Image (cartoon, rainbow, N blue to C red; front, top):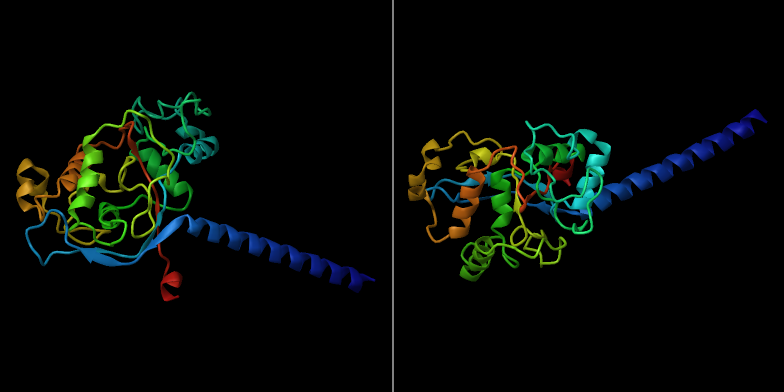
Amino acid sequence: MKRWKYSIFIFVLTQFLLISAMAQKKTIQHEKEKMALIPAGSYKPFFSDSNNVKVVVKSFYVDQYPVTNEQFLEFVIKNPRWRKSKVKRIFADTNYLRHWKSDLELGENVNPKSPVTNISWFAAKAYATSVGKRLPTVAEWEYIGRASRTKADGTKDSEYKKTILQWYSIPNSKGLQQVGKAKPNYYHVYDLHGLIWEWVLDFNTALVTGESRGDTNLERNLFCGSGAVGSSDFSDYAAFMRFGFRSSLQATYAIHNLGFRCVKDVTIKEKKK
């Protein structure tokens, strides 16, 4: 009798573990369906007068869409210290989540599926950490941001650059639309251009010249106005605007058209597949 009960117990336990494993696998697959795998590569940095200098980027996963209002709402529900009435001023200025009705209410004028904005760098970084991810580096963002709809490197496409510059130069007075409405780029990443600006991990060292995760050859003189002399493409005004915008930021700033997306490193196990 005891042996019979033990057999039933083992059977039930096995089924439970099997179901749990399948659910976990489904969750992981679902998570990666929302992220795009970016292959390793290199590119000539925007600020460089040498053809021999390359920015090296390791492979990584990137969110296909910017983080939305509803996603950030889930975060502040679980993390009260990041609610608009409780966040400390050393981590966010007074504009933090100003477009939300209250701590836990978006309000009628806020689309839950639009990218969350009025977010400080500290808050964006905290969110990324909470979901097991991080913010992209400048090098990583620029690497995927170079891609047009059909090419990994769209920087030679004058129409592509013109479209980006047009968005940068015309204020959006109609409010932010839902993420994913525009067509994706070559890597199947949406809304890198045309919707919001995005925080990057190393925004305050925005001018990179070397390896994406630790640039030791950064030319400090590029931060001054004469740094444009070192530009690798004087016609890329959109890039000038991006780097200029990043260099003007402080980590506590919360701006109405500045949001973020997350990235995740590729594990050694995944690289071997």
